Length: 185
Image 1 (cartoon, rainbow, N blue to C red):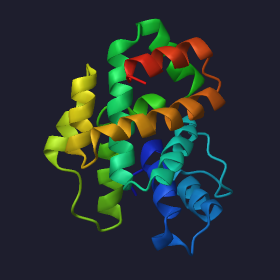
Image 2 (cartoon, rainbow, N blue to C red; image 1 turned 120 degrees about the vertical axis):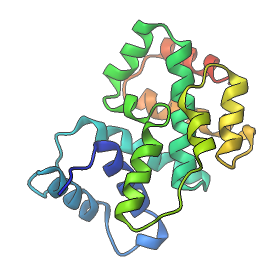
Image 3 (cartoon, rainbow, N blue to C red; image 1 turned 135 degrees about the horizontal axis):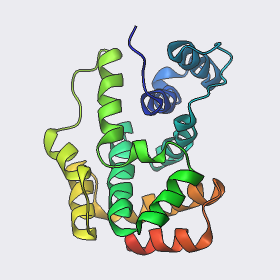
Image 4 (cartoon, rainbow, N blue to C red; image 1 turned 60 degrees about the vertical axis):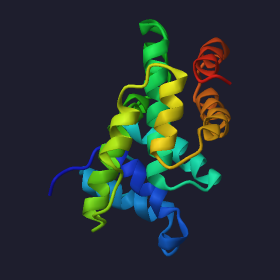
């Protein structure tokens, strides 16, 4: 069986928390994820990218679709990658292992792969995927959110959740400030 990446597993865990999958607990999903990854099935995975799963879970509180959450985070992290210095972005990826896999269209690709496994054939449009791939300014960020079917004002709702999550993962105040500035909040 083809192994899934950590982002696909993180997305699976986020989707599993939705009402459609109410019969499954997060520990059930973590156990399945560990088995798919070749782990021991007790929910403990050595894949550090699963740490980023919490971010997508937090965004589900905004009542957005999984592809909107993944794409929105991807667009915002793409902008961060293009706006921050190399050392600042390196610090971010060091503090939050796996966060780089959510940047750009990476999470959307994993979500599409997961959708295929779940039998879901409709997905994110190629225009939306393209829009989140390489965001270099706030106008492109707004366009990416619109391509994902969200109002550009959602950036202002995503940003505090992402910043709070990153702060909880150990990202310093200075870097959080730089991220907020890059996102226009």
